[in-house]
Image 1 (cartoon, rainbow, N blue to C red):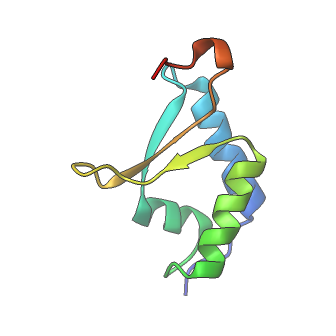
Image 2: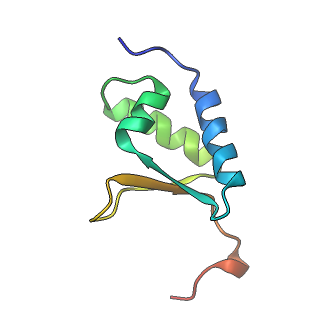
Length: 85
């Protein structure tokens, strides 16, 4: 069985790694994220828990793109830095 880890500490660690990143983002593979939280499998409840905790810290998680197998997590940019669409 996977080792139980404190989810608050895991989210805080992800937030710190994003803050020190020059790009302000971090890519995390799904199996790595699952391992960070100590889960063996993803369930709807676990996904909701992780998504909610990341949202509370201001971390936006994006699903992997077509060619990537890693989800991208980044902090929201202020409105002055947002790209025009």
